[in-house]
Amino acid sequence: MTHSDDPDFDLADFLPYLLNQAAEAASLGFQNIYRNDYGMLRTEWRILFHLGRYGDMTATEIGKRSLIHKTKISRAVTALEEKRFLMRKDFDSDRRSASLSLTAAGRTAYRKLTKQAADYDRSLARAFSAEEQAVLRKCLRQLAAR
Amino acid sequence: MTHSDDPDFDLADFLPYLLNQAAEAASLGFQNIYRNDYGMLRTEWRILFHLGRYGDMTATEIGKRSLIHKTKISRAVTALEEKRFLMRKDFDSDRRSASLSLTAAGRTAYRKLTKQAADYDRSLARAFSAEEQAVLRKCLRQLAAR
DNA sequence: TCTTGATGGTTACAAATGCAACTTTTAACA
DNA sequence: TGTTAAAAGTTGCATTTGTAACCATCAAGA
Image (cartoon, rainbow over all chains, first blue to last red):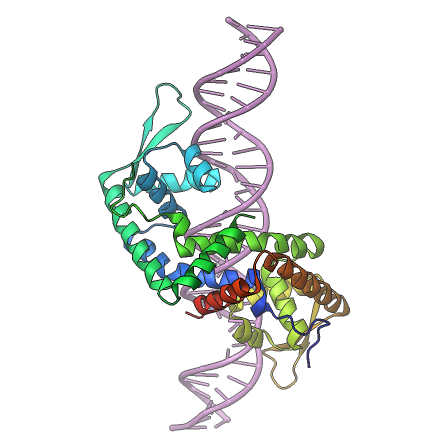
């Protein structure tokens, strides 16, 4: 006996819930890599990725691209700096901000992590047909864009 | 110019990232409802849901069903009790645990929230065709099951 | 030049979470 | 019966994160 007026509804079918479960499960495997192998947090890996992929930029520019909040960026940049994955180069023109660029170690980490991410992505996607993958990614993108 | 050995790879295509973005966006709309209207956190709403849907049970039983960690359950139950949404009934047979049951206010909140969840789910799903929805849910379930 | 307002980034504080340690009670069994 | 181990919850601590307030610098105009 159910206690609901809407007996067909179940959390397991609720899209936000289902998305969360899937996202958490999918994150886990890769999280282990950047956490255990590089001692990074998620935000740090994301920032490393942005710098590696798009080149040097300021914290604000990372924020515009990634939609990560500036306090998270500030802390992650400090952490990456302490780990010697990136360096700040002050501008003469504007001493409020600095150009962030990866060190050699940072670029190496970027290269390896990107490769592992691509591998991991393939291992996840392997469970689905090409059509399913296309639908899945399209739906996710659409949901994310709200 | 890209700085990668794998120039086709982008975070925006990375499934864990995409899933996270979609999950976060999808959560937001409903989060506003249980937060603003009922002052609940996500775990509290989930526990309210389990009790409303499946009837009275102990904290451990909720944990088995929902896979929520017992410390989160303990804190959420206390919070729901303070908000007068649930009550503990001690067992005579085993004084370590208690049966948790919703109050009248809790049942009302459950009914309304469940209805709003169902509506919200439909509003999300409306963006997709029936086939897309089926593929999406199937893929998410499969990912979550890993 | 001086003031006012915006911008880039950091820090303080509070809430949320995970992990481990702990308390109480029960069960097992020598 | 008395000791030990397990189970049900709770609490403490350390980490992470969001919000708001904050400092320093720069731009624009009076």
